[in-house]
Image (cartoon, rainbow, N blue to C red; front, side, top):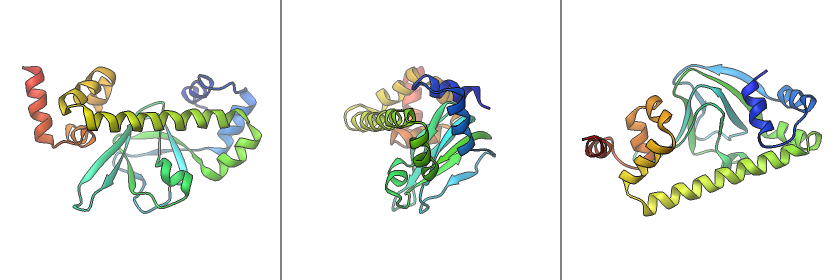
Length: 191
């Protein structure tokens, strides 16, 4: 059993040991090696993934073949393609392990069953979706109204561990800039 996962749920909803064990019985627990793809573009994202240990990231590929980082998920974070998961449509995202990772996944079908068995789980997923939505809105607002340097500094201040674990070319992609632009920003900041 994952104590981190239990704390994760209990920090958001009241869930008994029995309910948590029931939830765990519907979740698949597995490990993946670095560079393993757990979702490929074109597949329907039928599951959400919880990172117990390790680091994952998602990206989409544009018409020129350029990979654009959508999100990162370290320990105690969820990742998936919410649009594909909710609408049961093919995903335009790929999710890859940046490190060897320990993951729990919960399928859409299992989730529907669990909503009836653990009523508080609906509140948990509502909170999860609201947080994902507001994060997306904040990221969109930043990309439209904040300079690349300010966006980089936001990561430095709010998530410094990410910078220690993620290659800079992926950070640049997440910021919507080239690795060379990020290099210039870093040089300017750290001189």
